[in-house]
Image (cartoon, rainbow, N blue to C red):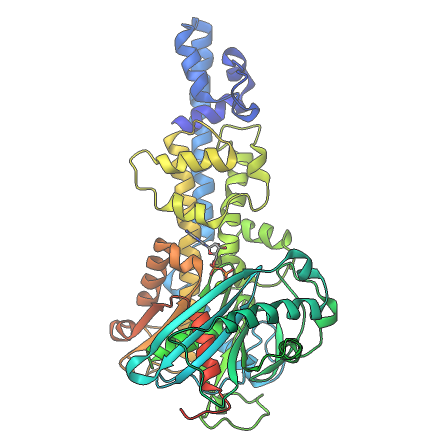
Length: 537
Ligand code: ADP
Ligand code: MG
Protein backbone atom coordinates (compact mmCIF):
# COMPACT_ATOMS: atom_id res chain seq x y z
CA UNK A 1 0.00 0.00 0.00
CA UNK A 2 1.10 3.51 -0.69
CA UNK A 3 1.03 4.60 2.94
CA UNK A 4 3.19 1.73 3.91
CA UNK A 5 5.64 2.08 1.10
CA UNK A 6 6.22 5.69 1.97
CA UNK A 7 6.32 5.11 5.64
CA UNK A 8 8.85 2.36 5.32
CA UNK A 9 11.06 4.46 3.10
CA UNK A 10 11.64 6.63 6.12
CA UNK A 11 11.61 3.92 8.68
CA UNK A 12 14.22 1.85 6.97
CA UNK A 13 17.41 3.78 6.24
CA UNK A 14 18.49 1.09 3.80
CA UNK A 15 15.49 1.85 1.66
CA UNK A 16 15.93 5.59 1.87
CA UNK A 17 19.60 5.76 1.08
CA UNK A 18 19.30 4.32 -2.34
CA UNK A 19 16.67 6.69 -3.59
CA UNK A 20 16.58 9.97 -1.67
CA UNK A 21 16.62 13.04 -3.84
CA UNK A 22 16.29 16.33 -2.05
CA UNK A 23 14.64 19.21 -3.77
CA UNK A 24 14.70 22.87 -2.74
CA UNK A 25 11.02 23.26 -3.45
CA UNK A 26 10.01 20.39 -1.19
CA UNK A 27 9.79 21.05 2.54
CA UNK A 28 12.18 19.08 4.69
CA UNK A 29 9.57 16.76 6.14
CA UNK A 30 8.36 16.01 2.65
CA UNK A 31 11.82 15.62 1.19
CA UNK A 32 11.62 11.88 1.68
CA UNK A 33 8.24 11.53 0.02
CA UNK A 34 7.77 7.98 -1.16
CA UNK A 35 5.94 9.24 -4.24
CA UNK A 36 8.96 11.21 -5.32
CA UNK A 37 11.05 8.24 -4.30
CA UNK A 38 8.97 5.99 -6.49
CA UNK A 39 9.25 8.43 -9.39
CA UNK A 40 13.00 8.62 -8.98
CA UNK A 41 13.16 4.89 -8.89
CA UNK A 42 11.49 4.63 -12.28
CA UNK A 43 13.42 7.44 -13.90
CA UNK A 44 16.82 6.25 -12.86
CA UNK A 45 16.27 2.68 -13.97
CA UNK A 46 17.45 1.20 -10.75
CA UNK A 47 20.05 -1.51 -10.61
CA UNK A 48 19.29 -5.02 -9.47
CA UNK A 49 20.73 -4.26 -6.02
CA UNK A 50 18.45 -1.34 -5.64
CA UNK A 51 15.51 -3.43 -6.71
CA UNK A 52 16.32 -5.92 -4.01
CA UNK A 53 16.36 -3.14 -1.46
CA UNK A 54 13.09 -1.90 -2.84
CA UNK A 55 11.55 -5.30 -2.33
CA UNK A 56 12.66 -5.19 1.30
CA UNK A 57 10.99 -1.79 1.55
CA UNK A 58 7.80 -3.18 0.21
CA UNK A 59 7.69 -5.86 2.87
CA UNK A 60 8.35 -3.25 5.44
CA UNK A 61 5.74 -1.00 3.92
CA UNK A 62 2.92 -3.40 4.46
CA UNK A 63 4.04 -3.63 8.09
CA UNK A 64 3.79 0.15 8.42
CA UNK A 65 0.39 0.19 6.75
CA UNK A 66 -0.73 -2.50 9.12
CA UNK A 67 0.56 -0.41 12.02
CA UNK A 68 -1.48 2.60 10.95
CA UNK A 69 -4.58 0.49 10.52
CA UNK A 70 -4.02 -1.03 13.92
CA UNK A 71 -3.72 2.44 15.49
CA UNK A 72 -6.87 3.52 13.68
CA UNK A 73 -8.83 0.52 14.79
CA UNK A 74 -7.66 0.98 18.40
CA UNK A 75 -8.67 4.63 18.26
CA UNK A 76 -12.05 3.74 16.78
CA UNK A 77 -12.62 1.26 19.56
CA UNK A 78 -11.58 3.69 22.31
CA UNK A 79 -13.95 6.31 20.90
CA UNK A 80 -16.91 4.00 20.50
CA UNK A 81 -20.32 5.07 21.76
CA UNK A 82 -22.52 2.00 21.46
CA UNK A 83 -26.13 2.28 22.54
CA UNK A 84 -25.61 0.83 26.03
CA UNK A 85 -22.82 3.36 26.63
CA UNK A 86 -25.06 6.24 25.56
CA UNK A 87 -27.76 5.02 27.90
CA UNK A 88 -25.30 4.87 30.80
CA UNK A 89 -24.24 8.42 29.99
CA UNK A 90 -27.83 9.69 29.75
CA UNK A 91 -28.57 8.09 33.12
CA UNK A 92 -25.43 9.59 34.61
CA UNK A 93 -26.44 13.03 33.32
CA UNK A 94 -29.91 12.65 34.85
CA UNK A 95 -28.45 11.54 38.20
CA UNK A 96 -25.99 14.44 38.23
CA UNK A 97 -28.82 16.88 37.50
CA UNK A 98 -30.68 15.58 40.55
CA UNK A 99 -27.59 16.06 42.73
CA UNK A 100 -26.95 19.57 41.44
CA UNK A 101 -30.54 20.62 42.18
CA UNK A 102 -30.48 19.12 45.66
CA UNK A 103 -28.11 21.57 47.32
CA UNK A 104 -25.54 24.24 46.53
CA UNK A 105 -22.48 22.32 45.36
CA UNK A 106 -24.54 19.11 45.41
CA UNK A 107 -22.87 18.10 42.19
CA UNK A 108 -19.22 18.79 41.62
CA UNK A 109 -19.90 18.79 37.91
CA UNK A 110 -23.18 20.47 37.16
CA UNK A 111 -23.88 23.83 38.77
CA UNK A 112 -27.59 23.63 37.87
CA UNK A 113 -28.02 27.37 38.39
CA UNK A 114 -31.52 28.74 38.98
CA UNK A 115 -31.72 31.69 36.58
CA UNK A 116 -34.63 33.47 38.28
CA UNK A 117 -36.33 33.38 34.88
CA UNK A 118 -39.85 32.23 35.65
CA UNK A 119 -41.70 33.57 32.66
CA UNK A 120 -40.85 32.53 29.18
CA UNK A 121 -42.44 34.47 26.33
CA UNK A 122 -45.82 33.24 25.13
CA UNK A 123 -46.08 34.97 21.80
CA UNK A 124 -48.58 37.61 22.89
CA UNK A 125 -45.96 40.14 24.02
CA UNK A 126 -46.37 43.61 22.61
CA UNK A 127 -44.29 46.74 22.44
CA UNK A 128 -40.73 47.86 21.83
CA UNK A 129 -37.89 46.05 23.58
CA UNK A 130 -34.13 46.18 23.41
CA UNK A 131 -31.34 43.67 23.97
CA UNK A 132 -27.63 44.07 24.55
CA UNK A 133 -25.58 40.94 23.99
CA UNK A 134 -22.07 40.94 25.42
CA UNK A 135 -20.23 37.68 25.29
CA UNK A 136 -17.07 38.05 23.26
CA UNK A 137 -15.07 40.52 21.29
CA UNK A 138 -18.19 42.05 19.78
CA UNK A 139 -21.36 43.19 21.40
CA UNK A 140 -24.70 43.60 19.77
CA UNK A 141 -27.52 46.00 20.37
CA UNK A 142 -30.89 45.05 19.06
CA UNK A 143 -34.44 46.36 19.08
CA UNK A 144 -37.60 44.54 18.28
CA UNK A 145 -41.18 45.69 17.89
CA UNK A 146 -43.50 42.97 19.09
CA UNK A 147 -47.00 42.90 17.72
CA UNK A 148 -48.72 40.27 19.87
CA UNK A 149 -50.04 36.85 18.88
CA UNK A 150 -51.06 37.80 15.39
CA UNK A 151 -48.32 40.08 14.19
CA UNK A 152 -45.45 38.63 16.21
CA UNK A 153 -42.15 40.29 15.32
CA UNK A 154 -43.20 43.37 13.41
CA UNK A 155 -39.75 44.79 12.93
CA UNK A 156 -36.25 44.26 14.23
CA UNK A 157 -32.90 45.97 13.83
CA UNK A 158 -29.49 45.33 15.24
CA UNK A 159 -26.01 46.70 15.24
CA UNK A 160 -22.79 44.89 16.01
CA UNK A 161 -19.93 46.81 17.59
CA UNK A 162 -16.37 45.63 18.20
CA UNK A 163 -15.10 46.23 21.71
CA UNK A 164 -11.81 48.17 21.54
CA UNK A 165 -9.16 45.78 22.93
CA UNK A 166 -7.94 48.29 25.52
CA UNK A 167 -11.43 48.40 27.05
CA UNK A 168 -11.33 44.63 27.61
CA UNK A 169 -8.58 45.14 30.15
CA UNK A 170 -9.46 48.58 31.51
CA UNK A 171 -11.99 49.60 34.14
CA UNK A 172 -15.60 48.68 34.56
CA UNK A 173 -16.61 52.32 34.10
CA UNK A 174 -14.76 52.60 30.79
CA UNK A 175 -16.33 49.43 29.41
CA UNK A 176 -19.89 50.20 30.44
CA UNK A 177 -19.63 53.88 29.45
CA UNK A 178 -18.62 52.67 25.99
CA UNK A 179 -21.51 50.22 25.76
CA UNK A 180 -23.98 52.80 27.13
CA UNK A 181 -22.78 55.34 24.59
CA UNK A 182 -23.30 52.92 21.68
CA UNK A 183 -26.66 51.93 23.09
CA UNK A 184 -27.68 55.60 23.41
CA UNK A 185 -26.81 56.36 19.81
CA UNK A 186 -28.65 53.20 18.68
CA UNK A 187 -31.72 54.23 20.68
CA UNK A 188 -31.48 57.73 19.20
CA UNK A 189 -31.83 56.22 15.71
CA UNK A 190 -35.09 54.52 16.63
CA UNK A 191 -37.08 55.23 13.49
CA UNK A 192 -40.22 54.30 11.66
CA UNK A 193 -41.86 51.07 12.65
CA UNK A 194 -40.67 51.28 16.24
CA UNK A 195 -42.92 52.75 18.84
CA UNK A 196 -42.21 52.99 22.53
CA UNK A 197 -45.23 52.96 24.81
CA UNK A 198 -45.83 56.53 25.95
CA UNK A 199 -45.11 56.92 29.62
CA UNK A 200 -43.06 53.72 29.77
CA UNK A 201 -39.33 53.60 30.28
CA UNK A 202 -37.65 51.54 27.56
CA UNK A 203 -36.62 48.10 28.76
CA UNK A 204 -33.82 45.84 27.68
CA UNK A 205 -32.63 42.31 28.14
CA UNK A 206 -28.93 41.97 28.89
CA UNK A 207 -27.28 38.78 27.63
CA UNK A 208 -24.00 38.56 29.47
CA UNK A 209 -22.19 35.32 28.73
CA UNK A 210 -19.62 35.29 31.52
CA UNK A 211 -19.84 33.41 34.81
CA UNK A 212 -22.35 35.26 36.95
CA UNK A 213 -23.92 34.43 40.27
CA UNK A 214 -27.46 35.54 39.64
CA UNK A 215 -29.17 37.29 42.57
CA UNK A 216 -32.44 38.12 40.83
CA UNK A 217 -33.72 38.07 37.27
CA UNK A 218 -32.10 41.46 36.77
CA UNK A 219 -29.02 41.37 38.95
CA UNK A 220 -25.96 39.19 39.24
CA UNK A 221 -22.44 39.23 40.60
CA UNK A 222 -19.59 38.72 38.17
CA UNK A 223 -17.54 35.73 39.35
CA UNK A 224 -14.67 36.08 36.91
CA UNK A 225 -13.96 37.14 33.36
CA UNK A 226 -13.18 34.81 30.46
CA UNK A 227 -12.48 35.19 26.73
CA UNK A 228 -9.74 37.80 27.05
CA UNK A 229 -11.56 40.24 29.34
CA UNK A 230 -9.75 41.34 32.48
CA UNK A 231 -11.44 44.18 34.31
CA UNK A 232 -10.62 43.54 37.92
CA UNK A 233 -12.82 46.18 39.54
CA UNK A 234 -15.94 44.55 38.07
CA UNK A 235 -15.37 41.21 39.76
CA UNK A 236 -17.66 40.65 42.73
CA UNK A 237 -19.92 43.54 41.65
CA UNK A 238 -23.46 43.58 40.34
CA UNK A 239 -23.02 43.79 36.62
CA UNK A 240 -26.47 45.22 35.96
CA UNK A 241 -25.93 48.04 38.49
CA UNK A 242 -22.65 48.93 36.75
CA UNK A 243 -24.42 48.99 33.37
CA UNK A 244 -27.41 51.00 34.59
CA UNK A 245 -25.12 53.56 36.25
CA UNK A 246 -23.35 54.04 32.93
CA UNK A 247 -26.72 54.42 31.16
CA UNK A 248 -27.65 57.00 33.82
CA UNK A 249 -24.44 58.94 33.21
CA UNK A 250 -25.49 59.25 29.56
CA UNK A 251 -28.82 60.62 30.78
CA UNK A 252 -30.78 57.89 29.02
CA UNK A 253 -33.93 56.34 30.34
CA UNK A 254 -33.69 52.66 29.74
CA UNK A 255 -33.66 49.92 32.33
CA UNK A 256 -32.48 46.35 32.43
CA UNK A 257 -35.46 44.03 32.84
CA UNK A 258 -33.59 40.72 32.60
CA UNK A 259 -30.01 39.53 32.90
CA UNK A 260 -29.51 36.18 31.16
CA UNK A 261 -26.90 34.01 29.50
CA UNK A 262 -27.09 32.97 25.86
CA UNK A 263 -28.58 29.54 26.59
CA UNK A 264 -31.53 31.10 28.38
CA UNK A 265 -31.95 33.63 25.57
CA UNK A 266 -32.07 30.75 23.08
CA UNK A 267 -34.69 28.92 25.14
CA UNK A 268 -36.82 32.07 25.29
CA UNK A 269 -36.46 32.59 21.54
CA UNK A 270 -37.54 28.99 20.93
CA UNK A 271 -40.50 29.18 23.29
CA UNK A 272 -41.77 32.35 21.62
CA UNK A 273 -42.41 30.40 18.43
CA UNK A 274 -43.23 27.06 19.90
CA UNK A 275 -44.73 26.41 23.30
CA UNK A 276 -43.38 22.87 23.34
CA UNK A 277 -39.82 24.22 23.64
CA UNK A 278 -38.54 22.79 26.91
CA UNK A 279 -34.79 22.95 26.60
CA UNK A 280 -32.07 24.69 24.72
CA UNK A 281 -28.60 23.61 23.80
CA UNK A 282 -25.66 25.67 22.58
CA UNK A 283 -23.17 23.89 20.36
CA UNK A 284 -20.77 26.58 19.25
CA UNK A 285 -17.28 27.37 20.45
CA UNK A 286 -18.34 25.92 23.78
CA UNK A 287 -21.46 24.09 24.86
CA UNK A 288 -24.17 24.51 27.46
CA UNK A 289 -27.80 23.63 28.05
CA UNK A 290 -30.73 24.96 30.05
CA UNK A 291 -34.24 23.68 30.52
CA UNK A 292 -37.59 24.29 32.17
CA UNK A 293 -37.80 22.66 35.59
CA UNK A 294 -40.63 22.42 38.08
CA UNK A 295 -39.59 24.53 41.05
CA UNK A 296 -40.63 21.80 43.48
CA UNK A 297 -37.93 19.66 41.87
CA UNK A 298 -35.32 22.22 42.97
CA UNK A 299 -34.81 21.57 46.69
CA UNK A 300 -31.96 24.08 46.85
CA UNK A 301 -34.22 26.95 45.74
CA UNK A 302 -34.67 29.28 48.72
CA UNK A 303 -36.53 32.10 47.02
CA UNK A 304 -40.24 32.70 46.78
CA UNK A 305 -42.00 30.09 44.68
CA UNK A 306 -42.48 31.49 41.19
CA UNK A 307 -46.10 31.97 40.11
CA UNK A 308 -45.56 29.82 37.08
CA UNK A 309 -44.31 27.01 39.32
CA UNK A 310 -41.38 26.71 36.94
CA UNK A 311 -37.80 27.86 36.86
CA UNK A 312 -35.26 27.87 34.07
CA UNK A 313 -32.14 26.00 35.15
CA UNK A 314 -28.81 26.80 33.55
CA UNK A 315 -26.99 23.50 33.76
CA UNK A 316 -23.47 24.58 32.74
CA UNK A 317 -23.31 21.05 31.31
CA UNK A 318 -19.89 21.50 29.71
CA UNK A 319 -18.42 20.35 33.00
CA UNK A 320 -20.23 16.99 32.96
CA UNK A 321 -17.91 14.01 33.37
CA UNK A 322 -18.39 10.31 33.79
CA UNK A 323 -16.31 7.16 33.71
CA UNK A 324 -18.54 6.18 30.78
CA UNK A 325 -17.15 8.99 28.62
CA UNK A 326 -15.00 7.31 25.97
CA UNK A 327 -11.86 9.33 26.60
CA UNK A 328 -8.75 8.69 24.56
CA UNK A 329 -5.10 9.74 24.70
CA UNK A 330 -6.08 12.76 22.56
CA UNK A 331 -8.67 13.95 25.10
CA UNK A 332 -6.09 13.70 27.83
CA UNK A 333 -3.63 15.69 25.79
CA UNK A 334 -6.18 18.37 24.95
CA UNK A 335 -7.19 18.61 28.60
CA UNK A 336 -3.67 18.78 30.03
CA UNK A 337 -2.62 21.47 27.58
CA UNK A 338 -5.75 23.55 28.14
CA UNK A 339 -6.07 26.65 30.35
CA UNK A 340 -8.45 24.72 32.61
CA UNK A 341 -7.10 21.17 32.99
CA UNK A 342 -9.49 18.80 34.70
CA UNK A 343 -12.52 20.98 33.91
CA UNK A 344 -15.13 20.92 31.17
CA UNK A 345 -14.53 17.34 30.01
CA UNK A 346 -17.86 17.09 28.22
CA UNK A 347 -17.26 20.40 26.45
CA UNK A 348 -13.79 19.29 25.44
CA UNK A 349 -15.22 16.20 23.72
CA UNK A 350 -18.19 17.71 21.91
CA UNK A 351 -17.77 21.43 21.15
CA UNK A 352 -16.36 23.46 18.29
CA UNK A 353 -13.36 24.80 20.11
CA UNK A 354 -11.94 21.30 20.61
CA UNK A 355 -12.98 18.92 17.82
CA UNK A 356 -10.30 20.19 15.45
CA UNK A 357 -7.69 20.03 18.18
CA UNK A 358 -8.57 16.41 18.97
CA UNK A 359 -8.20 15.53 15.30
CA UNK A 360 -4.81 17.28 15.22
CA UNK A 361 -3.58 15.37 18.28
CA UNK A 362 -4.57 12.06 16.69
CA UNK A 363 -2.92 12.92 13.38
CA UNK A 364 0.26 13.98 15.20
CA UNK A 365 0.37 10.67 17.06
CA UNK A 366 -0.21 8.64 13.91
CA UNK A 367 2.50 10.63 12.15
CA UNK A 368 4.95 10.18 14.99
CA UNK A 369 4.28 6.54 15.76
CA UNK A 370 3.43 5.12 12.37
CA UNK A 371 4.83 7.67 9.94
CA UNK A 372 1.34 8.51 8.65
CA UNK A 373 2.62 11.32 6.47
CA UNK A 374 5.87 9.65 5.67
CA UNK A 375 7.96 10.57 8.77
CA UNK A 376 10.33 10.66 10.49
CA UNK A 377 10.26 14.45 10.14
CA UNK A 378 6.88 15.78 11.15
CA UNK A 379 5.40 18.98 9.82
CA UNK A 380 5.83 21.62 12.55
CA UNK A 381 2.28 22.80 11.85
CA UNK A 382 0.99 19.39 12.80
CA UNK A 383 2.54 19.86 16.22
CA UNK A 384 1.15 23.36 16.69
CA UNK A 385 -1.81 23.40 19.10
CA UNK A 386 -5.12 24.54 17.60
CA UNK A 387 -3.68 24.73 14.08
CA UNK A 388 -6.72 22.80 12.77
CA UNK A 389 -9.99 24.63 13.35
CA UNK A 390 -13.22 22.64 13.54
CA UNK A 391 -14.59 24.19 10.31
CA UNK A 392 -11.78 22.28 8.54
CA UNK A 393 -12.93 19.07 10.19
CA UNK A 394 -16.39 19.51 8.72
CA UNK A 395 -14.89 20.38 5.33
CA UNK A 396 -12.76 17.23 5.39
CA UNK A 397 -15.76 15.23 6.50
CA UNK A 398 -17.99 16.49 3.72
CA UNK A 399 -15.46 15.80 0.96
CA UNK A 400 -17.23 13.30 -1.26
CA UNK A 401 -14.86 13.54 -4.22
CA UNK A 402 -13.49 10.23 -5.47
CA UNK A 403 -9.92 11.09 -4.58
CA UNK A 404 -10.61 13.31 -1.57
CA UNK A 405 -9.30 16.46 -3.24
CA UNK A 406 -10.53 18.78 -0.52
CA UNK A 407 -8.77 16.74 2.15
CA UNK A 408 -5.53 17.01 0.16
CA UNK A 409 -5.95 20.75 -0.11
CA UNK A 410 -6.62 21.20 3.61
CA UNK A 411 -3.63 19.04 4.58
CA UNK A 412 -1.52 21.23 2.35
CA UNK A 413 -3.01 24.58 3.41
CA UNK A 414 -3.16 23.89 7.13
CA UNK A 415 -0.26 21.55 7.79
CA UNK A 416 1.87 22.19 4.69
CA UNK A 417 1.80 18.46 4.01
CA UNK A 418 1.96 18.03 0.26
CA UNK A 419 1.41 15.17 -2.16
CA UNK A 420 -0.54 12.93 0.17
CA UNK A 421 -1.69 9.53 -0.97
CA UNK A 422 -5.31 8.56 -1.18
CA UNK A 423 -4.88 6.13 1.70
CA UNK A 424 -3.48 8.85 3.92
CA UNK A 425 -6.33 11.17 3.06
CA UNK A 426 -8.81 8.39 3.74
CA UNK A 427 -7.30 7.86 7.20
CA UNK A 428 -7.62 11.60 7.92
CA UNK A 429 -11.22 11.49 6.74
CA UNK A 430 -11.93 8.47 8.97
CA UNK A 431 -10.41 10.18 12.02
CA UNK A 432 -12.63 13.24 11.52
CA UNK A 433 -15.62 10.95 11.15
CA UNK A 434 -14.84 9.08 14.39
CA UNK A 435 -14.35 12.26 16.41
CA UNK A 436 -17.39 14.11 15.06
CA UNK A 437 -19.64 11.09 15.44
CA UNK A 438 -18.51 10.58 19.02
CA UNK A 439 -19.08 14.27 19.85
CA UNK A 440 -22.54 14.30 18.29
CA UNK A 441 -23.60 11.07 20.01
CA UNK A 442 -22.39 12.30 23.39
CA UNK A 443 -24.36 15.53 22.92
CA UNK A 444 -27.39 13.36 22.09
CA UNK A 445 -26.92 11.37 25.31
CA UNK A 446 -26.89 14.66 27.23
CA UNK A 447 -30.14 15.74 25.59
CA UNK A 448 -31.81 12.41 26.36
CA UNK A 449 -30.57 12.77 29.96
CA UNK A 450 -32.48 16.07 30.21
CA UNK A 451 -35.60 14.67 28.54
CA UNK A 452 -35.46 11.86 31.01
CA UNK A 453 -35.12 14.25 33.95
CA UNK A 454 -38.09 16.39 32.99
CA UNK A 455 -40.18 13.30 32.40
CA UNK A 456 -41.19 14.15 28.90
CA UNK A 457 -41.68 10.47 28.38
CA UNK A 458 -43.88 8.04 30.23
CA UNK A 459 -42.63 4.78 31.50
CA UNK A 460 -39.65 3.38 33.33
CA UNK A 461 -36.58 5.53 33.50
CA UNK A 462 -34.38 2.48 33.64
CA UNK A 463 -32.55 1.90 30.47
CA UNK A 464 -31.62 -1.70 30.81
CA UNK A 465 -33.84 -3.03 28.10
CA UNK A 466 -35.31 -1.17 25.22
CA UNK A 467 -35.94 2.48 24.82
CA UNK A 468 -37.20 5.41 26.81
CA UNK A 469 -40.75 4.58 25.83
CA UNK A 470 -43.49 6.68 24.52
CA UNK A 471 -44.16 10.35 24.56
CA UNK A 472 -46.65 11.99 26.88
CA UNK A 473 -47.02 15.15 24.87
CA UNK A 474 -47.15 15.37 21.16
CA UNK A 475 -43.89 17.29 20.84
CA UNK A 476 -40.84 18.33 22.81
CA UNK A 477 -38.78 20.99 21.10
CA UNK A 478 -35.07 21.49 21.67
CA UNK A 479 -34.00 25.02 20.72
CA UNK A 480 -30.51 24.75 19.31
CA UNK A 481 -27.99 27.50 18.69
CA UNK A 482 -24.32 27.61 17.82
CA UNK A 483 -22.02 27.59 14.82
CA UNK A 484 -20.91 23.97 15.26
CA UNK A 485 -24.43 22.56 14.99
CA UNK A 486 -25.52 25.09 12.39
CA UNK A 487 -22.68 24.52 9.93
CA UNK A 488 -21.65 20.91 10.52
CA UNK A 489 -24.33 18.89 8.74
CA UNK A 490 -22.89 15.45 9.47
CA UNK A 491 -22.73 16.32 13.18
CA UNK A 492 -26.46 17.10 13.01
CA UNK A 493 -27.13 13.81 11.26
CA UNK A 494 -25.17 11.78 13.83
CA UNK A 495 -26.82 13.54 16.73
CA UNK A 496 -30.30 12.97 15.40
CA UNK A 497 -29.53 9.31 14.68
CA UNK A 498 -28.30 8.76 18.25
CA UNK A 499 -31.40 10.39 19.75
CA UNK A 500 -33.56 8.16 17.58
CA UNK A 501 -31.57 5.11 18.62
CA UNK A 502 -32.02 5.87 22.31
CA UNK A 503 -35.75 6.54 22.18
CA UNK A 504 -38.70 4.45 21.13
CA UNK A 505 -40.04 5.28 17.71
CA UNK A 506 -42.96 7.29 19.08
CA UNK A 507 -40.82 9.17 21.55
CA UNK A 508 -38.20 9.88 18.92
CA UNK A 509 -40.85 11.32 16.62
CA UNK A 510 -41.95 13.67 19.36
CA UNK A 511 -38.50 15.22 19.81
CA UNK A 512 -37.92 18.10 17.45
CA UNK A 513 -34.61 19.93 17.23
CA UNK A 514 -35.07 23.45 15.99
CA UNK A 515 -32.15 25.55 14.97
CA UNK A 516 -32.83 29.01 16.26
CA UNK A 517 -31.70 31.74 13.96
CA UNK A 518 -30.25 34.38 16.25
CA UNK A 519 -32.21 32.80 19.06
CA UNK A 520 -30.31 34.35 21.88
CA UNK A 521 -30.47 37.98 20.64
CA UNK A 522 -34.21 38.14 20.03
CA UNK A 523 -34.78 35.77 22.94
CA UNK A 524 -33.07 38.20 25.29
CA UNK A 525 -35.30 41.06 24.12
CA UNK A 526 -38.29 38.73 24.56
CA UNK A 527 -37.22 38.04 28.14
CA UNK A 528 -37.18 41.79 28.77
CA UNK A 529 -40.79 41.71 27.54
CA UNK A 530 -41.85 38.78 29.69
CA UNK A 531 -40.17 40.34 32.76
CA UNK A 532 -41.33 43.87 31.99
CA UNK A 533 -42.30 46.02 34.95
CA UNK A 534 -45.40 46.88 32.95
CA UNK A 535 -46.11 43.19 32.60
CA UNK A 536 -49.52 42.54 31.15
CA UNK A 537 -48.91 39.34 29.29
P1 ADP B 1 -19.92 31.29 19.95
O1 ADP B 1 -20.13 29.90 20.42
O2 ADP B 1 -18.55 31.79 20.23
O3 ADP B 1 -21.01 32.23 20.35
P2 ADP B 1 -20.82 30.47 17.33
O4 ADP B 1 -22.09 29.97 17.88
O5 ADP B 1 -20.88 31.29 16.10
O6 ADP B 1 -19.97 31.30 18.35
O7 ADP B 1 -19.90 29.19 17.06
C1 ADP B 1 -18.62 29.36 16.55
C2 ADP B 1 -17.97 28.01 16.53
O8 ADP B 1 -18.65 27.13 15.66
C3 ADP B 1 -16.55 28.07 16.02
O9 ADP B 1 -15.65 28.22 17.10
C4 ADP B 1 -16.36 26.72 15.34
O10 ADP B 1 -15.81 25.83 16.27
C5 ADP B 1 -17.75 26.26 15.03
N1 ADP B 1 -17.97 26.36 13.58
C6 ADP B 1 -18.16 27.46 12.83
N2 ADP B 1 -18.30 27.15 11.53
C7 ADP B 1 -18.19 25.80 11.45
C8 ADP B 1 -18.22 24.85 10.38
N3 ADP B 1 -18.40 25.22 9.12
N4 ADP B 1 -18.08 23.56 10.70
C9 ADP B 1 -17.89 23.16 11.95
N5 ADP B 1 -17.83 24.00 13.00
C10 ADP B 1 -17.98 25.30 12.76
MG1 MG C 1 -23.00 32.28 20.76
